[in-house]
Length: 362
Picture 1 (tube, rainbow, N blue to C red):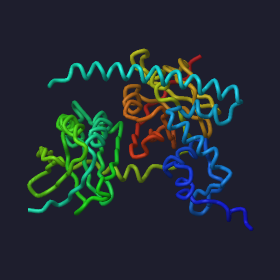
Picture 2: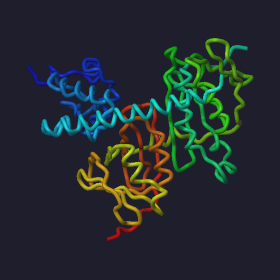
Picture 3: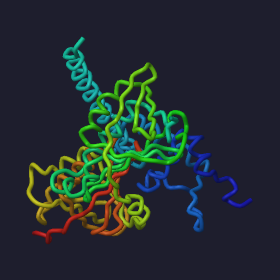
Picture 4: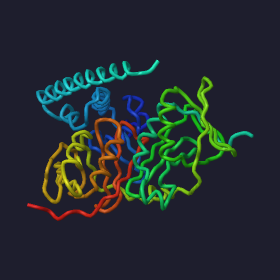
């Protein structure tokens, strides 16, 4: 019997171990859980039964909120190293939960007593979260004055998803929402929503468990399950063809996965001046300002060495928009768009444009 006869497809393996196929792809990209076989012609991943125990452990560690940099120690370190990493994470989790409980209690104390072209139903909190993620990429100032569409969020209703998109030409943020009804009814269409109105919409929608979007000849209307209703004031204009940019992205040659909070602290624009450069050399990740290394946060790096520079404020905004403890940067070339994403939310993608690098210091 051929060795590949016992292999499982990524879908079958995902169901068996309780991980989403998108998460398995992410863990493959990070080198945490590579498949047993990849078809050279199709790129399809296959997994072996012997990989189930590791996959289940990865899932349990992620359910516990452990960053992959620490999870790798549990997966591949000694027993003593694994125990130390787990105990340290448990301590941080307790401290974080206590801080969150205290903050929520304080907030609670302060609280006051013709047929449409397309329709979709989505979760209100999910819509609010998507708005908060993409709005920071909306253009402002001269760019928005010259190109008003860049000062807006594009909302697209497609056959299988609702997409929110924003760009200021230096960043591109895309969040896909799966309709609670399973699909979008009607024709594919879209509309532009000003950034301020998008924020107002998020504040209104977050309290609704479910809401409907109706796009018709007379405009766009949202309505909740218990009668709440809002008409949206949209903006006329043409949004850039962001899909062409996404489709033209070359394959990533370099991947960097790091603790999102640690990387954010290292990139903090308030502490340094000028572009920030990320460098990799083997498994080492270094953060430099004006050619001088200022931090070496833990990271999992794959591909040949690379250095890529960013405007710190632009990179920080991309890191802040992510979800979960980890961030993955996919670099195809030092001067091309860099994809920023996380395993915890494969439906959100940010593209960040690099800037000119600074010569290496001493």
